[in-house]
Image 1 (cartoon, helix red, strand yellow):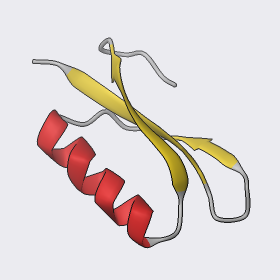
Image 2 (cartoon, one colour):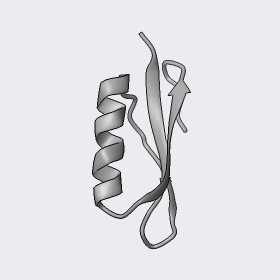
Image 3 (spheres, helix red, strand yellow):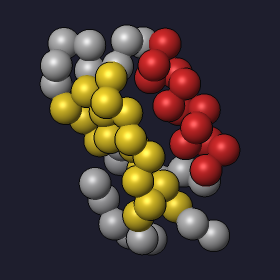
Image 4 (cartoon, helix red, strand yellow):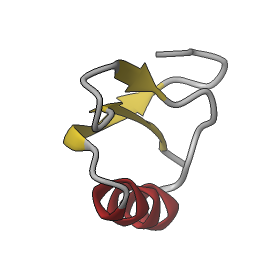
Amino acid sequence: MKIYGLTWTDADGTGQASGDGYDMPSAKDRKKRLEAEGSTCIGIVEIRPGERL
């Protein structure tokens, strides 16, 4: 199973990265929620087990 993390920029310009790993459907759902909150530059990145962004 592949694991994905997210990177994004908050509405105030602060760069962020997820601390949790997601499967692809969950990562896409999280991306939609971030977009709804006004975040930009949202990326879904494949990570290895135990790796952090």
